[in-house]
View 1 (cartoon, helix red, strand yellow):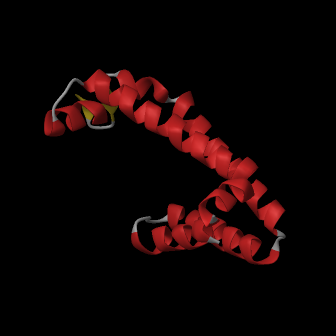
View 2: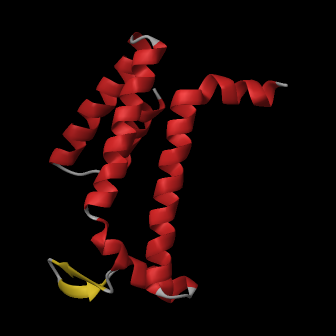
Length: 125
C-alpha cells in the first residue's frame, strides 16, 4: 500500500503529461493490490518491483563511473561529478558509493522478504 500511496503522491506533485497517467494507474493498481491481495502475494509483488528497479540501475550503471553525460543539452558533467564537486572526493568514489548503497538496499529488501517474520521477532524480545 505504501508503494501505491507514494506513486499517487508522485503523480500529484512531480510528474507531468503522460507520466502522470502512468503513475496514477500504477499507484491505483498498487494501492488496490495491497488492500485486496493476501499478504504473501502483496509481498511478492513488491519484491518483483524492487528487483526490477535494482536491475534497472545495474543495466545502466555505466553512468555511475562516467565523468561526462551526453544529454539533450550536450555533453555535461555527470551526476556523480556534480556530487563530488559539491561534497568533495573523487567522482569514482561517489559512483562506487551509490552502487554499494543500491546493493545494500536490495539486500535489506531481500532479507525483509524472506526472513521478515524472524527479524521482527528479534526486535520484540
